[in-house]
Image (tube, rainbow, N blue to C red):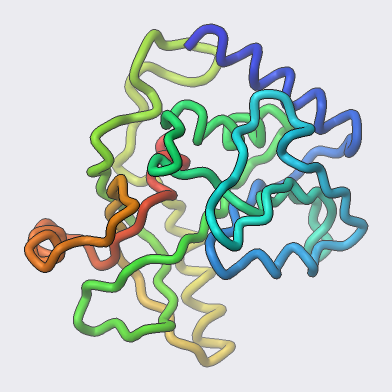
Length: 220
């Protein structure tokens, strides 16, 4: 864990060498949302292999680059392609980019993912804004020796998602007249989809949707 700090600093330095700005937010573009990167103004695209210690994105439709620039007038950095446990990466490596966002000065983390809906009130294509999460990945990115420079040993997770941003997202959905739910996501390892018994179990413990990412990134 102690060497993780040096990896973060090296990655942040490589990004600053090409884009020397402080981002307001770091954005992780999930499956199907990569096109949002085309909306970024004055973009500087950095391929993951050019960023020290960044993994390589192997998932279909995940382009594998970091796009820096402005979105709606605000400086941001956006991952066009994320990493997954089922690709063979440990959670510490999967969550490295989030720590790099913080090192660059980002104050917000915006995450998205494609998920399977289990709540019977949800329909295919609906949007759900996450207000809580369940980790069933069998691992945690914080396991190991703690480096106080990266955060506390026992972070409070009673409210991992900012209530004000949740309400803002729901308000935008109402204004733009599209369906947006508010619910709980559960993360599993994958890559196989769940059995019917697993869906019943996950629904029974309070999850509305199930996915294979996002939860570890939010933990750190």
